[in-house]
Image 1: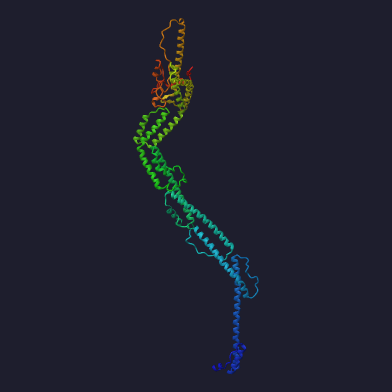
Image 2 (image 1 turned 135 degrees about the vertical axis):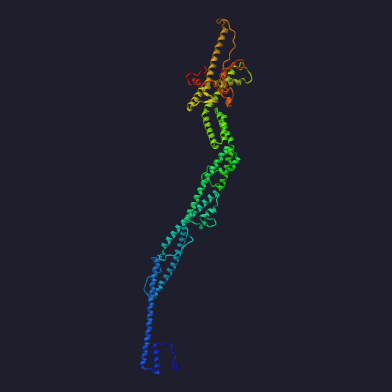
Amino acid sequence: MAAVDDQTPPVLDETTCGTLLQKLQQIWDEVGETDDERDKMLLQIDQECLDVYKRKVDHAVKSRAHLLQALADAKVELSRLLSALGEKTYVGIPEKTSGTIKEQLAAIAPTLEKLWKQKDDRIKDFFDVQSQIQKISSEIAGDSEQVESLTVDESDLSVKKLDEFHVQLQELQKEKSDRLHKVLDLVSTVHDLCAVLGMDFFSTVTEVHPSLDDSTGVQSKSISNDTLSNLANTVLVLKEDKKQRLLKLQELATQLIDLWNLMDTPEEERSLFDHVTCNISASVDEVAIPGALALDLIEQAEVEVERLDQLKASKMKEISFKRQAELEDIYARAHVEIDTEAAREKIMGLIDSGNVDPAELLADMDNQIVNAKEESHSRKEILEKVEKWMAACEEESWLEDYNRDDNRYNASRGAHLNLKRAEKARILVNKIPALVDSLVAKTRAWEQERDTTFTYDGVPLLAMLDEYMMLRHDREEEKRRLRDQKKFHEQMSKDPEVFGSTPSPARPLGPKKVTGPRANGSANGPASRRLSLNSHQNGSRSTSKDGKRDARLSAPVNYVAMTKDDAASHISGTEPIPSTP
């Protein structure tokens, strides 16, 4: 074979089946192959060539089928992408479907690349939106620490679907913002309430959720339903606590003020608890000062109230007697007679026995003071008229003394002033009957309304007025008798023969003088100013400047001169009251 190979001519540049067959014939000729062998070998060569062609055809068929499948897949992918992206029309889709398979694939490939890129971008957009939605939803649900893996649904990546997610995201963002504002408002309310109540804000708010501490950012705060609910409950609890503490503090402040007023506590000592009493009438919402309702402040007020209660027990006598003095002063100014000694002894007995609550005793005395003030107010109008009547009686008494003064017209010092006073006194005296009538009517109406006797320092006022009018009537009768006697003596002096011998002149009698009801004291004095109509003073004589004696109405301590029936007989109207002629 080596020799044969050495003799083999060089291979032509182009080797074909014919040249190869020709060379094979030459080799066979040299070898001496038989025709059968040659035919057999050629048949084998033909079969091998056929197999090669067959393999090539099969490969070509497979390649064509693969390309057709690829083209079909590309078209399906194109339709799927367009459907997923929601694109009804697309500019890059080839209009013609003619041409070779590879040409069709080459025409559709760029469109697929663009759609795949658009799909990837769209998936990213969907992932971002859905991630935010999932995060906010988890924050609202309160399980932000257990976020599930997110899967984007690639079957619908349309802009419409993306817009729906954006709308959902905006709604969730708005809800988150609203919830965040609610959380911040509730946290602020908790802060204010804790400040007023003197409580630790951080420990209170972190019990609801640790993220509510100021150390975390605003966006990191919990906005879950549980957080909002717990915050709202915390606010309600704190508000109720604030309300109860305010009521307690106001109760203590009221007790403090009552005890201070009871014991006349000085302002310097009261000012130490201004922070307690300043909220005595405040509403719950008005109390906003930090520490205004702290527990230590309430305890401080409780201790002070307890201390004052103990001090009050030791000062009860002093306080009670002060109340009694106030009561006595009211009755004294109202000219109402009371048994002061018995009242004070009763107070002493009640306090010493310990059988009465000091607060009840003082409350009872306060009620007595209120009743006394009411009675004083009801007597005010009558007492004012009594004062006018007394003043008029004093002027009447002065005028009588002035009229008996023989030197009243002399040009002495102050004579002109007395003359003017006499003129005013005459005008005032002439008004006395009308004043007395008005006073009687007012007094009678007062007695009928209250079914009791109106007394003036223990003396029935109607009896005083009746006695005064009777004495005034007697005085007028005495004046009339003296005038008639004087006229008779004058006629005797002019014509003694008509009346016979002139009798020896008798001692002239002075007219009775009605003295004002203030004869024994001023109107504003205590028991010494009481009016009286004692019989031994009603008819007594007092010496005047000219040596004459006159009858005066005086006011001893006790009035027993007239019975009530005797006084009523003159005041009731059955007998006319004499008036000045």
